[in-house]
Image (cartoon, rainbow, N blue to C red):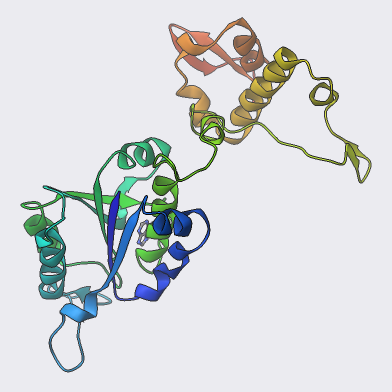
Length: 268
Ligand code: ADE
């Protein structure tokens, strides 16, 4: 996979040289290039922002440097036909594991890190001729710029690229891979600070362990993320799952998971 990131703080992205993503880059599984937007600003001060038309607080990123930076990426000989241009923004669609999965199948991702009040809107319109443009938010809060969002997105997407995570099994049972949160995990010692590891995990009965873990997933998701439980397709739930959900305050009604009317506030 090829990734280009444009930022006025290229050093912010240095963390992508560490750990699994750094190794994937060295192994040639990910090609990641970071571009300094100021290299495409030509005045003495390398200005990338200006005051907003219509007034208001803060500064807006000028279109000129962005147009040049994105053209240079799109015109590179080995660029994809129509790369996906991701514009991190609190006004974008919210990033999640399903989006990470989808992005991991793309050949070429370009990230445009805005700062200040954002990028002149005409850049996004203009870019749509050469890129598939997608504003994406990390969540419903405001960061100072897109760089932290890019760190998160590149890590979430990069680890799904085949070969990046050594044991692909570990991608299967993690939170959000099946719409549920991950079950709790334990390691040695068997008793720590007076707290014992759940007995069933020490017994070696794989069926019982799988059931215990599934129940923990359902119970934990019910408490922490009831919105995810309400989105479960009941077709994927067996009798034991339905029992676990009932105990957590949910039931199946008319082909959907709903809150049990008598459950009060016990679930979530
Ligand atoms: N830039 C500023 N806030 C952001 C957010 N929540 N997600 C992505 N990019 C951002």
